Length: 95
Image (tube, rainbow, N blue to C red):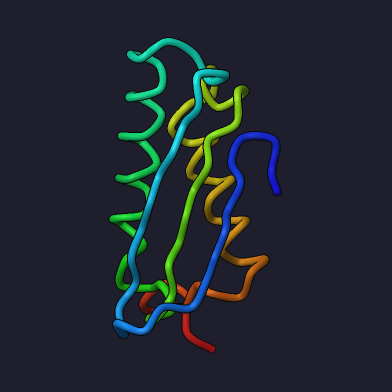
């Protein structure tokens, strides 16, 4: 868990990653919730080639995410995926 985002992961039978994003009313009104969800979807879209296949990824926005910048959310998602061990290194940084 992170103060901005919660990541839940489960194996799936389809062989490719599926992504879900939710934000409850605790995050804010509809405009704020939709803004946070758009940002999280874009963050995951950019990482799609690096995600481990055959998993479902579910991002849950926490209330503090409504006031976070895009880059704060990006760092939170990166940290959670790294911690879970489900993110390959960026191209050119393989060891």
